[in-house]
Image 1 (cartoon, rainbow, N blue to C red):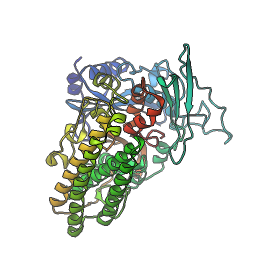
Image 2: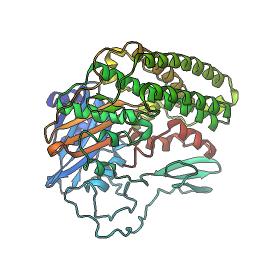
Image 3: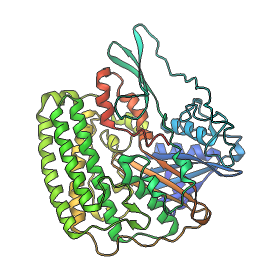
Length: 513
């Protein structure tokens, strides 16, 4: 069945722009996935819901040309196993393993290794299952015997890196199979810092939980808190005032600029160009100071709130911010010229960590890294919410797929975000920056979709009784891109891995829910 036919059967979803909802039975679950993949669509999220005793379901959120499609599969009658979709969307494999660890719902995928558990709780315990029996004791469970895939052959040896890293890097294990210096295979194991965020949401009030949403992955605080509030406001049927939507877009683009500045400096440093790190660190610090002066925080964890924003932007601060961003754009453009002219930097960036467009499409690479490999999805343009329909953001893309392409995308998006910031602060519509938000009815489900700096951020919220949260699932784009990094490093030398890894700059925190 063509993917458009599934949209014809679906009903509009209240919690996100241009998203439709569809409940299916087991055979159609796989048919939808295969049709979306064949039609060039993408899987954005996959999660389980066992929050009600006696009711269990798995859910997938796809995006195609027609919009977003949220698909639900009840699994109570499937003896605990539901059809896996990893053949259509390889990124689903880790997501399905996580669903089992958290909810106890097993797919038909042959890979049954634990993904998030890490012996943090007994194997028979599933933290998100309704009415689940808590572990009898707090003593640790036996350590998992985790079988990495081994590469056989003359001269092949393994180099384990992590999970503990130097400095403040979060934990993750990387198992390299190499010959000499050339990487034959990389296998990751993540999820070491299971923070219990999805379970924690269930103990919070709907109106307060945006603070936790903003801390799912701290470098994407605005994206996650906006996606959460978008879902909540959709459930309540209460659109925010135009001024607050513009202020949210301002915060989102400031967050994008800050992260691109940090990454461009770090990438220069990884290429042995410390000058780049020094200059971009200086520029980022000045931006954070301007952000604090204008909006009250260096990092905008608590700026987006249900019904609008926590504060307004005064005209004097708006003028100062516009002036600063214009200067930032000019200086960043000059630094790009320096990067382009530096033979050593270009030699390290070019042809390293290449992900060809066809491989990127097959593996589901999304966000900034995807746009560097010919996958041009950008929710601000393809599935926009206000005010992006009127701001007219421009897509930045490449088909080269190497570290250099991911660096160029950052430079291009930096300039475009500076343009959007200036457009926003000089054209803010009048009116309130926040309005009261009515309570959504119990059982209502909302979906938030925001293009964060790294890629599409998803928040799925189901309301409980009396303003509580029955279920909340956050999805960081890193879930889709971590597996692609394993392919990007093949054929490269081991010393280039830090540079390739940084060019993706994926989130550990957004993965360890």
